[in-house]
Image (cartoon, rainbow, N blue to C red; front, side, top):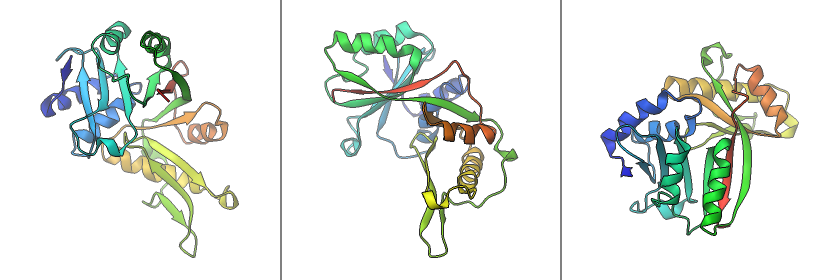
Amino acid sequence: MKILGEEERRAAEQVLRHYLPKSSKVYGYLFGMNRNKPSTLQVVVDTWPDFKSIIFRPDLKNERVSDYTKKVTLFCTDAQVLKRMIAEENAIDWTTYFLLGGLDITLAPMVKEVAASRGVNMRHFVLVHLLTLSDPQDLPDSHSSCCIVDETGQPVSWMLLYDYCALGILYTKPEHRGKGYAKALIASMSKKLHAQGYPVYCFIEEDNDTSLRLFKNMGFTEDPSYRAIWFEFNF
């Protein structure tokens, strides 16, 4: 197991790009880190340079790490290699509360097995679709804000970005729905992220049919065989 330094993280970014969109979450984290976006994460791989598993975990040497919920995310091309990292090599600290986010659902049985062997309680947090947009230039023109306000300056519709640069929480006040505000915000933020070099993608909860239709109608696509899941441990 190896902790990646600055130059190695840059090389890993190029490797992960070949596995988009399934690597989108870890790629987004690494893309930001490699462009000096503040982060409290540490990046570890099974071997270098030909890694098959990459894990982002809290960097305990970072003085700001305790200010945030403990989060772990990962990507692998070999489930057995990942299992060895988390079961035998202590790549994850199983002794404290943490969220494991954006996990390929096909890896869930293995993670459950390892958690059970360690006597760690866990529960399903959320199951999501992964939708991506290859070319946001086809989206309608819009303003550059991530928040739309009314004539009095009060927010009526807004979008947040996750720290791994996915399109995040989108909300429009009920009395302002049906006015096209959500589409305008999606178009705006998609074009902004694309211009900065990020892959444009979002996670949509499994039962959120309204948002799923909205994003698909705007040109976002998904691999129907893929789902991502969040787990909570030691709650």
